[in-house]
Image (cartoon, rainbow, N blue to C red):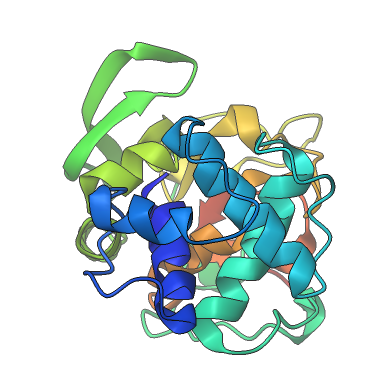
Length: 264
């Protein structure tokens, strides 16, 4: 909700109806600005007013948000992603071309299953260490269970710690919860790949999964939550350290990220 209000505040400011802080808080000044817009019913709850304005603005800018009814559904959510990108960057979101995506490799992660891979990481289920999370996680299959640390390979621990600390600093704990970046689905797990005969990257403790319920294994960009622009900074944190997202590179298994390169 906070990001939605920030975008609304930016647009209202552009139109001359808001002169307060861009803070994501739907306070009296923000709601007064919305009340100046024709078509906004100030008797509705704040969330309905904000949603109505987002739908109106998206449609006006050529982004199909569907009916202007103040109800948040999949079409409105997709339209908001496009609208937010446009407001924040001044241009429409570029088409997604995974084959053109280049991820730097500052830590020298090897190609999975290559001779260099086995030399770099050693045997499965070895050289493991415990890493404390910089913010509290919850187990994605049982959100009542809190998780404060995980077991990972010692060669990725420093990089992983930097990544999650950057996520905390960029998003803050409120947005981390809102975006389910605290829904942890596991790291080390000495097992075969699902429906496969090769050992999973989890067997070396060099892969992590997040928010598996909204990023199912076979879901592509049109369904996976982590494909939305809200998560661009999330992926930037990982990719600056050379970690590879199967979703970003191959458009499946968007929950998964690993410290190993994919074969060309």
